[in-house]
Amino acid sequence: MKPDSLEDVVYKKSASVLVGNRFGTRRSDILLHVCTHAQYTTAQIVNMMRRYGVEKLPDTMLILMARQEAS
Image 1 (cartoon, rainbow, N blue to C red):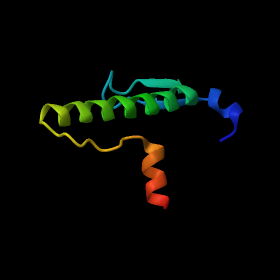
Image 2 (image 1 turned 90 degrees about the horizontal axis):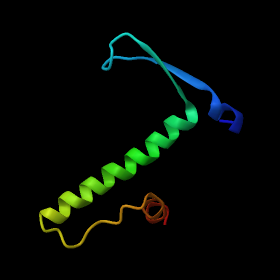
Image 3 (image 1 turned 30 degrees about the horizontal axis):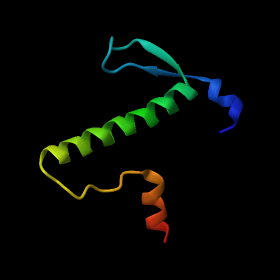
């Protein structure tokens, strides 16, 4: 993907919200959503684990997981 293409609009036909309507979203906004959604989900899982008394929480930093896997 080239930097210029981040401003391209991607179109999708909705299957859940206003079924059948077509929505456009910039690629840069889709990537931002993916990143922030992953952080939100990870935080929710860690909070649930804490509530259940888990004391040794897993390292949830993706870069650290990737480094462990690579070594």
